[in-house]
Image 1 (cartoon, rainbow, N blue to C red):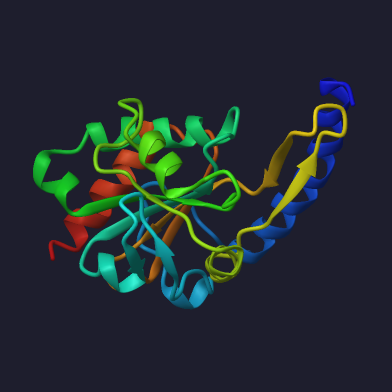
Image 2: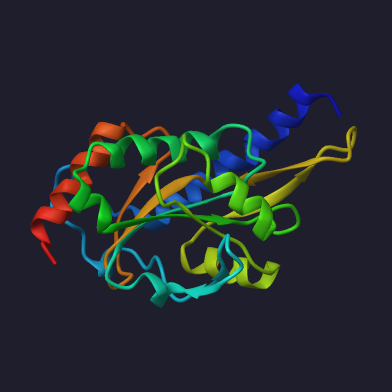
Length: 210
């Protein structure tokens, strides 16, 4: 199938998936959250237990990162654009924090492409200097990944390219901010200004000195 047509087919369901996800996480009286107060967990049922494997081959759970803010992005290492772009935004935002602030945040990439995103592949990918320092890459079985995606309200599906035998992953694309107890704080869309993301992180860290 020609590449332009493939992307056209991918774009249509993506719009529907993102619209559906946005409906889940947005309430009618939502104010500007870039510099606003932290939203309570009652406003969006996002986040929960997971068990996955990190880029060193170690089994981890949501409790592994207890006490740290988590910046979580669901993506895959063969993603041509949205995933690396979002991770670069995370890196740019965290670079504006001081060392103590950065130490309180754990950036995480959770793959939903276990067929290609092996432990070894994740280790190579997260070591890129373009991505946040200390980025953790998590993968696992299809069942483990589906369970994690479900609690974070992430939607994804495989999109085959019949012409090449290759495939892409059609997926929602958001950066999640979770507090030290794994409770949802905020969500940021692809393309969020790193300055706004930095400001939101600083606001939360100042309001919650821990």
